Amino acid sequence: VHAFMVWFVVIVIDLQIYACQWHFVKLRAFWLKTLPPLRASTILVEGIPLRNRTNTQLKAFFTEMFEGRDVVESTSIIIRTQALEHAILARDTARKAYDDAKQQRASLEETNRDSDDETSSQMSTPRRMLQASTQALVDSAVDALKNTYENLERDCEAERQRLRDQISMVESWAVENIIGHAVGEESDEDMMTTHMRRHSSVQTAFKSALTEKLLMFIGHTPTFEEQKIDSLYAGMGFVTFRTR
Image (cartoon, rainbow, N blue to C red; front, side):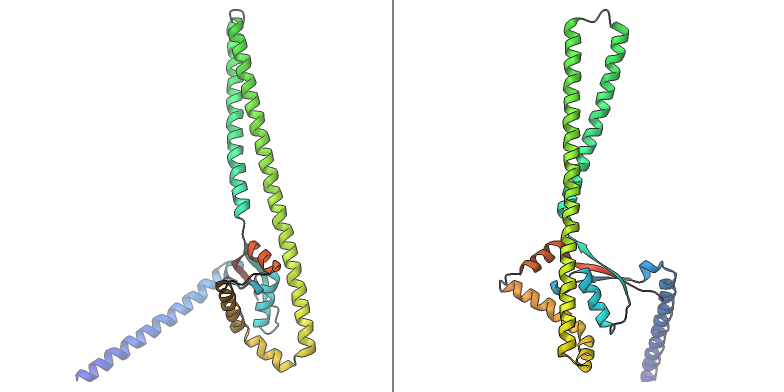
């Protein structure tokens, strides 16, 4: 009787667990279908090796994983924008200081105007000189803050342009590498080898990332292209797949 009750409890609990899991799968499938298409079809990819760390190469990698089918809508690798973030923070700080200074100047001008209207005939010459010198100092400070803000705004735009140029250069390298790799495959590999290579894409990416870490550990000097890619792109990004 004891053994029967043990097996009865085990079987009932097992069936209940599987039933709950199946119910959860159906609920999750329904939830995914109700999500916006972009959110439902986008995944986060981490640990991207340098050989795949461009939008072009990452898209080619996933296309190869799905045996050449055009299933990838877009790829977006996270860009290292620390310098741009610091420039924007400095610009916003300067803009706030400039706006505050303009408000203070407007308040001072209004105060001076009111005092001129009320006691224009009774105001002494030293007081007029003090008022004029204070107004001149405030105007000079506002102009200096304006120049600082405009210079920082130009720095932000220059950093944005630098990132755009670097992205264009790195992606052009990726296109050239993919074209050259494809030409070499057509001349050296047969269909069976290509089919086997497609199914080993995950293992290749893992080995590439592992090799990368090992080379960094033993003091490997990265190439110019690798340095540019690593300074521009982080090791993670988003892949959006096409929806039917």
